[in-house]
Image 1 (cartoon, rainbow, N blue to C red):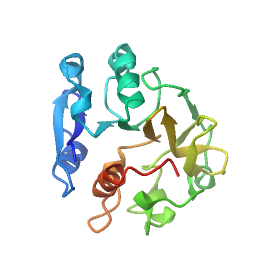
Image 2 (cartoon, one colour; image 1 turned 135 degrees about the vertical axis):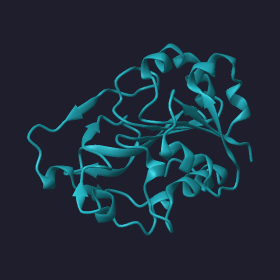
Image 3 (cartoon, rainbow, N blue to C red; image 1 turned 120 degrees about the vertical axis):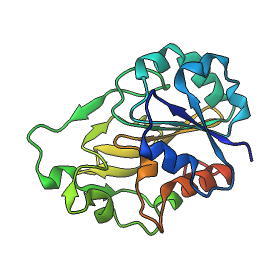
Image 4 (cartoon, rainbow, N blue to C red; image 1 turned 180 degrees about the vertical axis):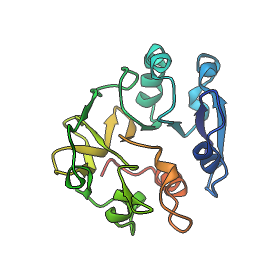
Length: 200
């Protein structure tokens, strides 16, 4: 399996270290996001885009990213989508004056990446809610919604096709920083990529 590629963003972040050091079927390499124009993305099985990445710069590389997806690549993107670097994505929606019930993570569909992980453990971290996500996005019409925020029609995690490729979008803090020692999400994501799963 080809390695994964994670984009760094100018400073050391523990979540990226957790991703690149995770025990996965294929290694995950770290490259500066601003070197993207010189990178042949076909050398990588999956691109990991942190919530801290420069979306304005990524938007300038949108044709390169779309070409990678069209050829069968996978992009795992995190954060509040503000600049158009992914095909068919729209911006994020905040929840005004939210209460706990508004930011409770709801499982809409089962998926192997999150198998065995209770949504309650995504909603709360050390007793505090909101780390996993507190905004929602309009998912493309053909997306499979995995998790929603507060209500089933407010997507938080979803997967959608782009020709031969797929986008896994998470509208919050980096996915690979969740799951705990025994249920880390990074190896599960790499396994999902390796198995070439359909959107479902």
